[in-house]
Image (cartoon, rainbow, N blue to C red; front, side, top):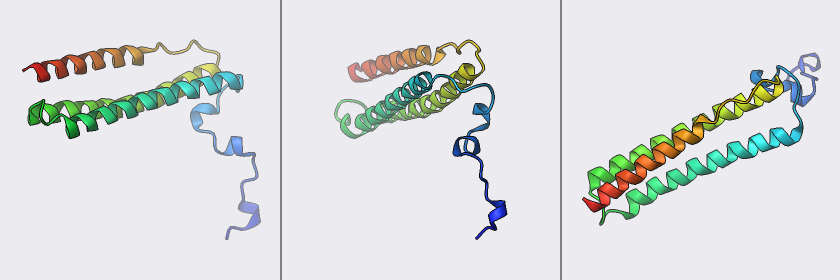
Amino acid sequence: MRPLESVDVRPTEERWKPRAFREGTDPDPRFTLANERTFLAWIRTALGIIAAAVGLEAFAADVIDSAVRTVIACGLLIFAAGLALVALLRWIGVERAMRTARPLPLPWTAFLVAVLLAVAGIGLTVAIVV
């Protein structure tokens, strides 16, 4: 047990704030919660892509060749992992911008998702037709 004088008595919000959130001022909670909802939407999208990869590998054996199916499924899994990471970085970037009254970062993640899903759709179409 630690001696009483070594216990951190600062308020919880100061003690547990990541370094990125210690600068600037707290934005309106509605904006912070909206940023969090957007982050969670990106995470749900990543989970959906993971489910699609698992479903492709589990149920498309009769339709798509094994090697092609595995490559596409692995590509989707890597894409989902990258999307989750990018969602976290975007959440931090938007939160930091709101706290310091800077412009919000450009939503390049949406462009990336659209392009990669289009490529995956074309790849699946080619794999099914061939």
